Amino acid sequence: MSRILGAHMSVSGGYYHSVLHAHAAGCECVQLFTKNNKQWGGKELTGEDCRLFKEAMEEHGITHPLSHATYLINLASPKEELWQKSIHAYAVELQRADALGIPYVVVHPGAFTTSSPEEGIERVSKGLDQVAKLTQGIQTQALLENTAGQGSTLGYDFSQLGKMIDGCQNPDILGVCIDTCHAFAAGYDLRDESEYKNAMDALDDAVGFDKVKAIHLNDSKNDLGTRKDRHEHIGEGYIGRDAFGYLLNDSNFKSVPMYLETPKGVDDNGEDWDVVNLRTLRSLIKD
Image (tube, rainbow, N blue to C red; front, side, top):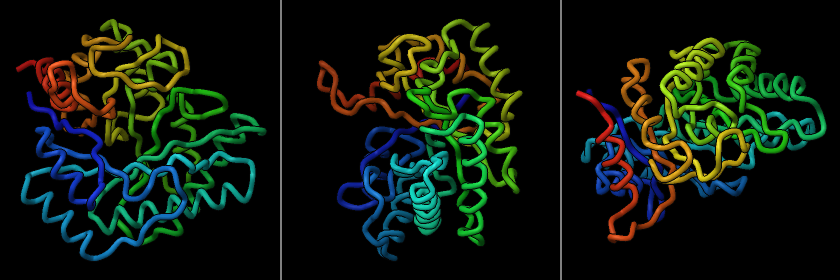
């Protein structure tokens, strides 16, 4: 049973470098930022950037590129200025990804801060409708990511993601990206096969498996339900190896690309952690 596995890679030196890094690590797919993830603005994307990126993808056989939006975006914000700024920023993220030939851009829904969860969810839906109007004619689509639930952040409960999508004028153009660390931190126990199934049933009921377009594979530095978003290497955290085996062998996700967002660097043997984590994941796939 094959799976489409990859990792988030740096674009330092050019967008195509993310593809080179992915290829060197043995990835089939790659995730990247198309601009600085901690700033609103970004360097202009050139035709040369797009050409080199697409050529590198084809040359090295990397598929399913995925973009992740800036962390500053807050589509749930009750503050009009920040909400409008977030809408325009996300529209730009989608346009940049479209120019690079990237089909999806992952975004964290945001935090309701001084309002309420219900108001925040409605705000996200309305914001996504505005984004859709600003990006008419492009192919790239929005993916909402589940969160760990820290503070007033929304999207930690799968039902919240479902409500955000259902509240949009055109829910068919939206999907989700599921993060294992975030789900675990939010209280979805993935360690036992029956509990894993319960969590997936909740996801299917709230969102639908057909909406899951990408998966982030991350172990957790913190225990179940702690609402802390701290990623760990596969099998090195509180989630453990078994849960990733359930996910990798789940036929519902056989064609869904999966991306590591685990810490970068090398292990005690001097081996790249992306290579180590990918090997661990592939060892869990049953024939």
